[in-house]
Image (cartoon, rainbow, N blue to C red; front, side, top):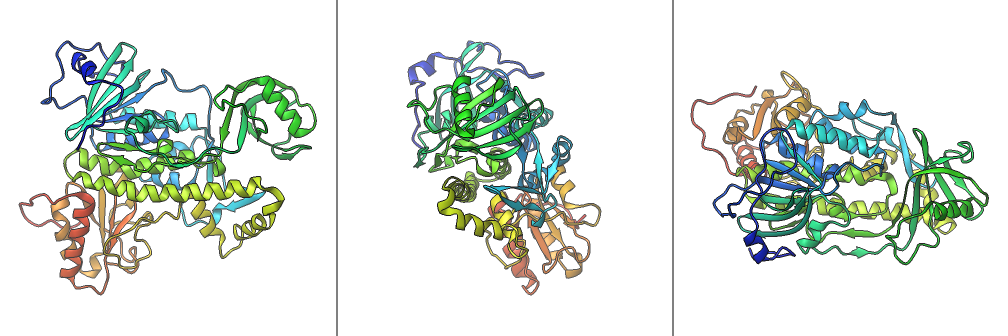
Length: 542
């Protein structure tokens, strides 16, 4: 693989030592040691994660669960004093359930069985096929705090105030140049993942294309305290010259309105006088803002990275895709990316699977990103085009509530209906989808996935699945074989569940045992790497 070279020049790299990560409780990196870097070192980490947002922290949790040496670099010295989003949807809660974490989040806020689609149109979340038919109200800042706590529990190092300034990769790994509180340092790792947001430094340094459309419409967001808290009702208010969306928050209100005259420099800070003027103009009356906690501007740009993997560099979350904020789906898509990548990168980093497994991350999540962009663009277009697309909005609003279509509609928008491609498909309805919490002979599926972080082969002993159990034995270090309770695997003798909870394979009841076992071995090899040599007597399912 050719080197990818960025601002860290070869000469500077040669004169700068590698910083060693100290043992003990998390602290800033110690001063660089005087010895120069060598190619024989194991490096400072197996994986460097750049960015301590939802994607980076969720990925860190996944890697930590898999005993992968992981270091998270975050350029800001402390978590932000503002909050971008306020929800986790059913898809995220399903994924977190498969790590035993959903209850930590559910304890933090209320759940609501509907959510906005476009304008006044609502999604009927209760119609979805999920254990969590609702949206959870929780601040993104709290999501990050909980994930950071979990990552630390799993031995992950989170280094704040560390900004990536350069990277270089080759066949043996990645070297990252970092500005730290102690000065310039170099870190080595096998892999590096950019979870550093829409303006990703990793994406730019790795020279990964980010095609799409620039922002054409801009929106102002303000977390403010009103002089009269009753001056604007919660929800959408249609004013004389625009609309204002008011969301209640503890001690303040979030106001969102169209920015009709954004400055030439879209990065120019939003001032309180400018926000006040835009608010008054939209409403056609003066509503005094007593205090502003956070003011910002965002656009409707749509972009998707050309590659989610470039050699030993990968992208996740906003670094991989940006889209309008319709549906408040950003945090949820970030968690989805991280769960898909985490177990695959863990297998590769531990040497249990070839790095070609990471190509499936690009295949699955790039397609998911394209669907995300399509859905959010459609929602935004319907919302901003007003009366011209009112018939389309009204039609979709009906479909979102109709008994026959409400579930499908909500699952498509929230990602609950995500279905990944499978090999050797049998046509079973669970293939590629999230497997429900199947009752097992001694427990249930979700606690098993949370405990091991690995895959699971669920077998129905009444169908004579001995050959399938034997076929899976060489993967016992990565896949747990368990017996499901009678009739809990409808229409199949066995289901292979990936670590992220999706079904990778379902056996065909009519297939000869030898054929099914051979097929299963091929699928195991594809998703979990080559088999381990098995010795000793045959073991049965637990």
